[in-house]
Length: 103
Image 1: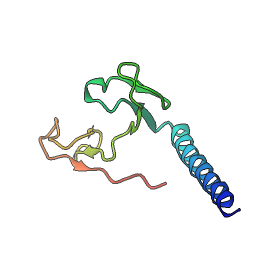
Image 2: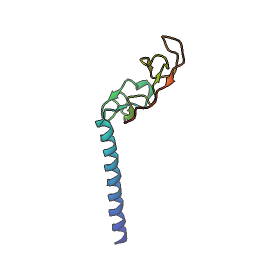
Image 3: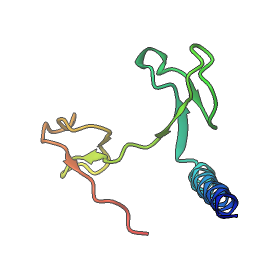
Image 4: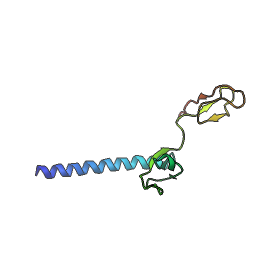
């Protein structure tokens, strides 16, 4: 009886883990913030809106945030926004990280 109880508990735990993982993926996907791409650098052009297999090599697609974690702006020209640090094209000042939006 102990072996059967252990198997039932293990199956129940696995089901909960899968359910939780699916819920997290669904909630991020519903927000439109996740895309899926091939982990192979040469297949970076493969971008899907849901998990699956890479059509080029068959590997599992991995989640990738569509928006960069940090955006940069010019202290003097807030209309200048970049995905990477650099210089402002208008005045040449260093771009600084933007403060995250408060929600």
